[in-house]
Image (cartoon, rainbow, N blue to C red; front, side):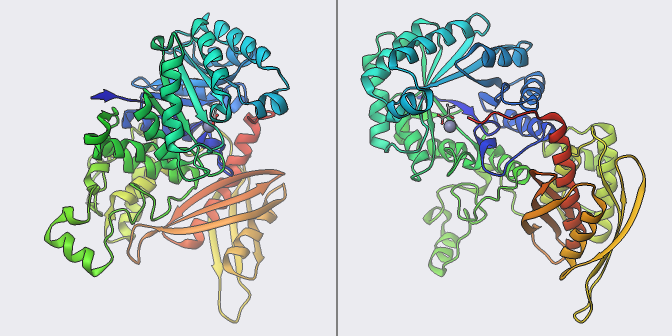
Length: 513
Ligand code: KIV
Ligand code: ZN
């Protein structure tokens, strides 16, 4: 039985998903949940890309203790120095250096000859090795590279001190059979390969990322890379939860497992989905809402007679608690604190106090409180932007009638503490609210996406709104939760403005890969 290392890149490749922009507090929250999930290595970001990325990698490195934390660098000293500055205080500083090796990338992107690429990769690994005990080197676009060239450069990079060699399928092009064979070939042909671990990194452009990762394991990969919910550039990365559960369910075939605590999967998936605003499709393998739903009569009949007729994965395996009633309006602060801990939230006393007030308020209005309600309250409280002066919704009133013009009146606390009172109309209630907020804000804003869903079931369920806006020329997203859909809509918009203002103040000229 082999144990496969899990390298999570939700906060780096995943955060490169179109429209995703997590703030530092949210990144730390995700990293702590990845640690609870039992991920071996967390790629926390790309420190040279921006001040915000640097700060997040540093804070995650300082916070996370049970997973190893790494940062990405191009093959140059400046990028490597940035990762070192961010991670020098961690127990086992680790770096991930990459350079493209395919003819397409070398010719058109790098404008370098293969010899120059070898020299540059070797120099970068030697330089990184002066600081880092663990150096991972990636041959970007490995799957469209010449195999003999890969053998040559990998041999040299191992001589230079690399500990892990990653063969990414950067554009999601390869097939499972080819990818498995590539690992076998590299293992056979590279003379010093026994000094390193081999890693697989797949993208899902042709829907083959999970199958390719599993094929890599069959071919000899010791580490798999991916993201939670498969988020990432274009069609995304390989879904770590799918690979880990496939290894578990088909252990008989793969003879390999990971160290992931599978019962933490659902919670991790929900957190990532909430914070990124990327909803998990209902039919997504392992974590989709319908993954355990049996709809047809024949299937239902079979499952009632014997679960295993149609169910190969149990909900409990990934930590799905079917709508467990948890707390009520008589629950005290102690019970609430215990529930928060059980859900993985270690709140400061101040945050706990605030969250408890929100919970009590909700418990007065909502008959039954479930795990997912508490989770929603806690994610909002934990990741609130407490470190920047922000706009705060003080009150909201909306007048709507089928034959009237919808009108919203808002009282907003400005970042300098001033209270502003404004009213405006719109063709619908939400538009009236957003027109009013726009009147209050100093910079122009534009809504590009609006999504609403209920947290759990029932008529009295919480409403959760996700918006994507451009504010003062910068794009960003925001979330708002409330029992009323209009209040949730207002909160989401204001949250987006606050997040953009914070990211703006911290990010200078983000470099994209
Ligand atoms: O897909 C890719 O090639 C990458 C590299 C930076 C490893 O993400
Ligand atoms: Zn990638």
